[in-house]
Picture 1: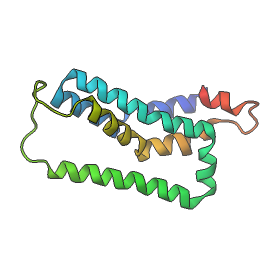
Picture 2 (picture 1 turned 135 degrees about the vertical axis):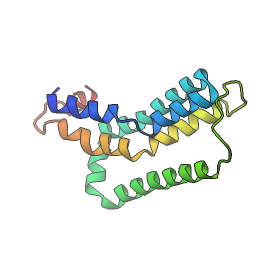
Picture 3 (picture 1 turned 30 degrees about the vertical axis):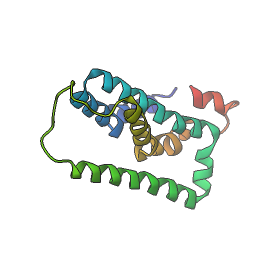
Picture 4 (picture 1 turned 90 degrees about the vertical axis):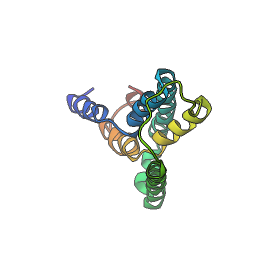
Length: 146
């Protein structure tokens, strides 16, 4: 692995995204168990990005501007939907882990969608990460997996 990749990956990982914020907010409002469930769901939301990058979707998105735009606008629409729901909430933040909130059956799908439609992850896995695979690599798949 190159030093440039490690530095850039560290910067991307160190800057909290919507998944990290969702996990922290879930932990603050619903307790540690719900936060772990949210983190698990967010991790599941990363897997399709990784699989798509390894499977060559990056090439499709680079060659088809329409598909890339549709994917990008789906992510933007979901982020706007989440922002709208947040703006509609009333009252102060309640930090009560015993309060009845959505269970794991609602947290996991929400967490998956947050990371699945996260534009930062899309850019990282589909546009940025493939640049670090040399074109003359004998096995690009292994390099991507590493």
